[in-house]
Length: 235
Length: 88
Image 1 (spheres, helix red, strand yellow):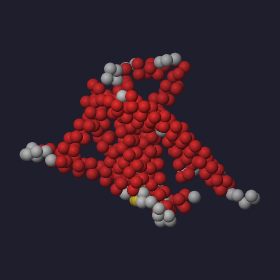
Image 2 (cartoon, helix red, strand yellow):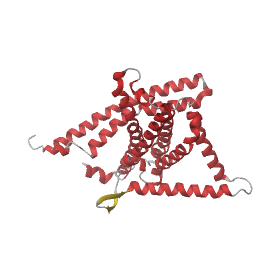
Image 3 (cartoon, chains in turn green, purple):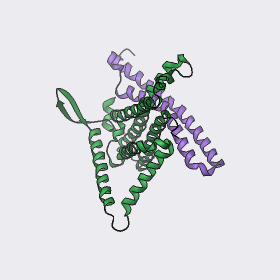
Image 4 (cartoon, chains in turn yellow, cyan):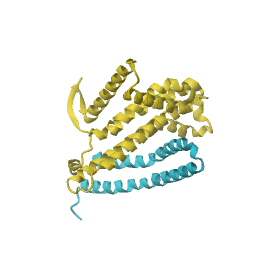
C-alpha cells in the first residue's frame, strides 16, 4: 500500500545520506536541506539589508523601505498583544515569524516544507512551553503551582494536562496544516501524469501562501497570548 | 473468504479506520463556519473594528481546527506508520 502511494505521490521525508556519529546512525534528510536553504536565505537577506541600512546617502531604496515596513508591522503585532512586556519578545517573535513564513512558503520553490516534519515543529512548541513556564514561575512565584489547584482542588490533574498539552497542540496544529497541504499537493501532482485536468497553481496559492501565512500568524499569536497570560498586568 | 492473510485483514481494517477517523473533519468545518458567520456579522455591525475582528476570528478558527488535525494525524499514522502491523 505504501509502495503504490509513494511511487505516484511523493511527500515522504527522504533520507539523502546516512552518517555514523559515535556509533549512532544519523540521517540527513530533505528536511535538513530545506532548513539549511531557508536559514542561508534568511542570513543573506539580513546581511544585504544591513549593508543597505549602513548606506545613509540619499533616499532609502525599495528593499530598505520594505524591510522597515515589515519590522514595524511585526513589532506592532507583538506590542498590540503583549503590551508592556513586548520589548523582550519582539526579537524572538520576529525571528519565529520570518522563519515560519519562509518555511511554509518554501513549498513554492519545490522544497519540502521543513514545518511538515514533526521534528521541526515540536522543538518550537517546546521553546514556547519553556517560555510560558519561565514567565509563570518568574511572575507568579509559588502561585504558579497553587494556580493548578485554583477553582477546585480536585481539578489538579485536568489543569496539569492543560499545561502540558500546550506544546503538543501548538506543534501538531502547525505540522498538521502544512503536512495536509503537502500531501494534497503531492497527490494532485501524482494525478497529473494520468489525468492532466488542471494546473495546480491555484492550489499552491491556497495551501502554501494562504494556509502557510495564516498558520505562521496563528503560531506567533498563540505563543504571545500564552506568554502574556502568565504575566500580570501586561496589558 | 478463506484466503485473507492476517496482514491483509489488518491493512483493510486500518483503511476503514482512516476513513472513519476523518469524519472528525465535520466538526471543525461547522465550527469555523459559525465563527466566520459571526465574524461577518460583527464587521457588518462595526466596520471600524475589522482588523481586530479578523485576527480574533482567525485565532479562534485555528484553535477550533485542532480536533480535526488530531484526526488527520491519527489517520496518517494508520496509513504510513501502522502500529497495529507490529502486533501480528
